[in-house]
Length: 382
Image 1 (cartoon, rainbow, N blue to C red):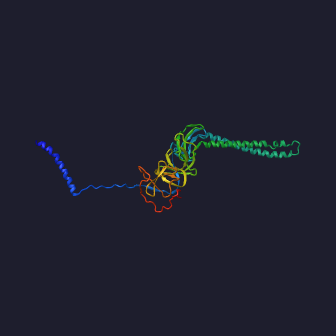
Image 2 (cartoon, rainbow, N blue to C red; image 1 turned 45 degrees about the vertical axis):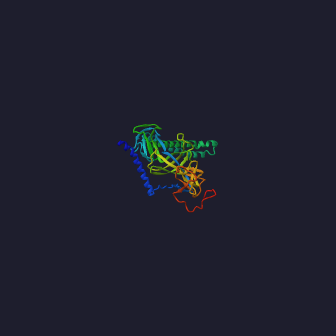
Image 3 (cartoon, helix red, strand yellow; image 1 turned 180 degrees about the vertical axis):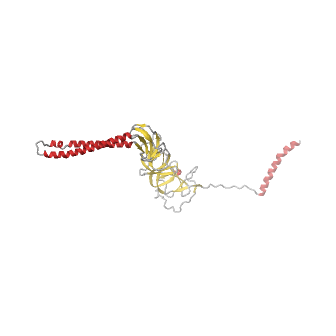
C-alpha cells in the first residue's frame, strides 16, 4: 500500500510546482518581448566607370630556341690533328674561335705549287710583252709592202699569244686562291657565338668532305615560337614585347605572325626574337602579346561581366540594375566595353547569390559629389 501511494502523489506534486512558478511570473509582471527584424541593404564593392585607352593583353607561351642550329662539317678531307681542350659538348664558344684543325701539309704543298705556277705565268707574260715590242717594230717595216693586210696584223703583232699568256696567268692566280682557301679550311672556327650541343671529334679521326664534327646552337640571339588562342589577334602596329624568364626580363621583337595554325595545339603562332644573358635553351616562357588597341572605351574587371554580357550597376536609388553591354574584347583580367556604361556609373564587383533587379544595395565607397557629367540621354559620356 505504501508503494502505491508514492506513485500516485509524484505527478501531482510536479503539476503543483509548475502552477506555482506560473503564478509567480504573473505576479511580478514578467512578459515576453518581441523584436521586429528589418532587412538591411546588402553591402557591395563597386567601381566608378571612366573612359580610357586600352590594349588587349594576349596570353601566349612557348620555348626558348637558338637563332640557328648548325652542323659544323669538314670542307676538306684529312686527319684531325688538333682539338682545343675548351671544345666539348655544353661548352660556350665565341665567333671565330678555333674548334678543330685538319692536317694541312698536303694543302700547303698544293698552295706552294700554285704560287710557283702563278710566278711562271707572270714571267711568261712579261716575255710575251717584250716580243710585242719587237713585233711592232717589224710591222713598221712591212707597212708599205704588198704582204700587209688587216687580217694579218693581229698575227704579226702576236696579239693571240699575248691573250694566251694573260689567260694562263688568270688560271694560275685562280689555282693559288683555291689552294689558299683549302689551307684556310683546314682550321674550322665557330661561325657565331653559341653553345656546343654535340661533339664527335678525336685526334687522328679522318674526316671526309661533309662529315659533321660537332653541332653548335647560335645564341647571339634567341627565338620563341609563341602559341596563343585563335580567339585573339595581334596588333599589326606593335613590334616589341616583354619576355620574362624567371626573374630575368628581356626586350623582345615580334618578327612575324606565322600564317598557319599549329596542327597539334590548334593555336596561332608568332615568332619573337630577343637577346640576353643567362638564358637556358628549351626553357618554358609565358608572355603577354600586344593585342588590339581601343581608344576612349570603358574597361572593367573580368569578374564584373555577368552571364549574357550583362553588368550589375548600382542605380541612383541605391538599387540593383542589370544592364546589357557591348563587349569589344577581353583578356585574362579585363573586359573592354563599347556601349552600355556611362561615366560615373557604379559597377558592382561583389558576388550576389540571388541577384534581383531593384533589390536594395549600399556601396562600400561613396558616390562622388560632382555627378553632373553623367549622360541622361543614353549616350556615353566623353
